[in-house]
Length: 268
Length: 297
Picture 1 (cartoon, each protein chain N blue to C red):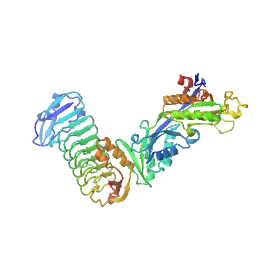
Picture 2 (picture 1 turned 45 degrees about the vertical axis):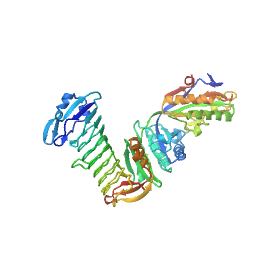
Picture 3 (picture 1 turned 120 degrees about the vertical axis):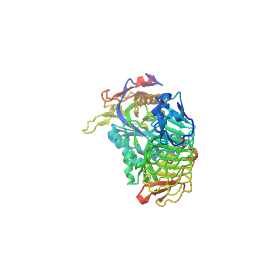
């Protein structure tokens, strides 16, 4: 295990892109301290900001005492386990393709952007654009699992292509907007315009109060086997409280403005 | 060799390589899961005329199924991957898709997979939808009672078909009772099916026929009503024979099932069961030989 302990709050945003368990597994502590990092527009070495300790399991990285100025944690991660014992900033798990990233606190803007695999677990809240697309890209998250224990900001799963996002709490406006496929489950309230411009995919909103979705056609209440599968997945993932809400759901199909065949599933 | 007063003939069953898969079918109740399983495995006694051999492996508790509903595991066997793919497509499409409340899942993931929902999805006429969850891909096909949920593909593997043994005895009722005991014991085991009605065959066959175009015909050596006019294999006082045919996912599964079945058939026969034998073709056709005495030693 490698432990990175933040010495002091960075003055500006500090990117930890490339500092992932799979890329530093064979690196000795002294060498790791010399790894280049960028804070704002200033270049430095990892040792400038972190105290490095290495012992035991090489594919486990722990960042002690996170900070919301730490960006791109787990970006590009392909294997292993990365644990953050606090809050972090933007871009957590960007383009992640494997392994598991656990965040004990909250994450900022753009977590799981362009995620291609693996699992991102956030105990606290997530900022806007969870599971979205990189600037200029046509599609967002294309595989993997994201589980948020708290609330999420706006545009969860924007342009999402595949994969699963679970938000145990509430989600902000434009949830599942422009979604191409995949599954988003929200346990709490939804912000305005859920599923707008949605092509395919599923938004499962387990809170009874769902805002109007004018582009969606009501297809009635059904008890779907796929929902049972989702419920069992939630239960296995430690989200038994959410799983308890699984049952017959009302199905709305849309966004018909785009001839979409996505769906919003809500309590009857 | 004698077991419970029954002679075990020094012979062997000859079996063949096949391809097999397992499907998990769930429904709203165990009764409907069974109906789906029985329908999908109907008319699947022999590849000779049915295209596939199929049977119910066992019922599944809700805790054992992917969607937490009662279910059933069925095994399908065919002579090659292509024939298996056709059997899966046709049987799931006609017997499980059509059955109220069912869903169909892959019961194995290994091997070059055969299409399942991937081919049946077109029934949705444009309103089918794929859903990927926990690394597995499913198809949701709209049907009149909701949705038919079906896994995208199912794995398949090498398997063994045609394991068998014969129960020779005095009195049809006693022989049938012995065969039923054997089937009851064998149904406790995994990875096997007995594809014939109730697991039991009365029309054991031999290769060839005196009639042109008929590849198999009645195994007259074991037919009591012609014993005086053919070279019979029946003991003096035997007047009924029943066969149990076994298909399994492995040679070991068939061996275990054969041994368990024979022991159960011999036990409690009350002297009416005279001999256990097996069907073979001289060992020249099948790659798998199950020597009865070795299995029971």
